[in-house]
Amino acid sequence: QLHTFLKENNYRSVGVYTFFSFVDGRKKMHRELAAWARGNFGGVLQSAIPYLSHVEQMGIYRQPVPAFAPASPASEAYQDLWEEIYQELLNERK
Image 1 (cartoon, rainbow, N blue to C red):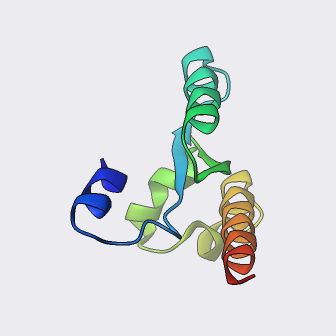
Image 2 (cartoon, rainbow, N blue to C red):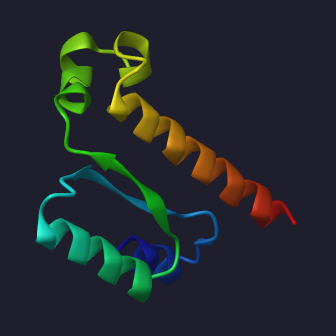
């Protein structure tokens, strides 16, 4: 929908990336949907934010996960996401 909106309103869609959040890797549907999207759409990042309580707790703590749980898997997932976005942005500049 976002890409359609951008195209219809003459905006560039370069630099628009998609990522999945609240992913439960144990669920077949989550794994299949992510694989399908990556195979059928451009700009879908490999990094995903897992369905973990620390992600939900951001609203309670009103802080990003690395601020209150820096060693958690959720914090690592956000770091991985940032690194992937950063690499994509560097590649766009080339």
